[in-house]
Image (cartoon, rainbow, N blue to C red):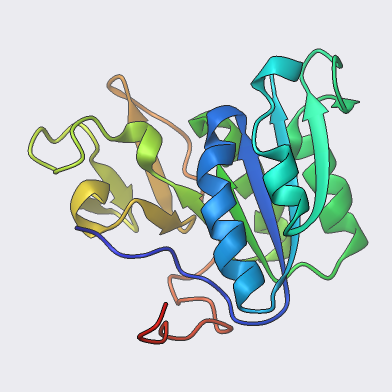
Length: 188
């Protein structure tokens, strides 16, 4: 069901993992690194015990760690560190996985830069099949089920509905795929 995560084949990727979302960032970073992409990961959690996959991600590239309470790494949110990485330039794409408010904040950071950003829709899915309808999102004013169309989405005119309330759109740019991607080879 769905579509595989769109991976670039060259350049520099910023992978942002918040809390348990870091577990999803890890295979994305692995796939990018295998393609020769330079990977920078920004990971964080509420406190030290919530920071996961740090060692595994360090094997794939640079890792910047932060915690909300300052018990490990920098004190603050992943978006604080991501803002600095983006300000330094050279990032071709951003992958963000974590709580919906974190992904929205990442999209708000990348929107002014017109930077291709992919977020995970796993947090809004209930049964993973699309049967219950709980994961409906609007993409460019069209209702979709991430369980059926893919769990990752370009943060383009995307509106998440959570508990019956509609969040602010986490729109970025037009709905064209990232130009530096290509169809995966049969061996991928």
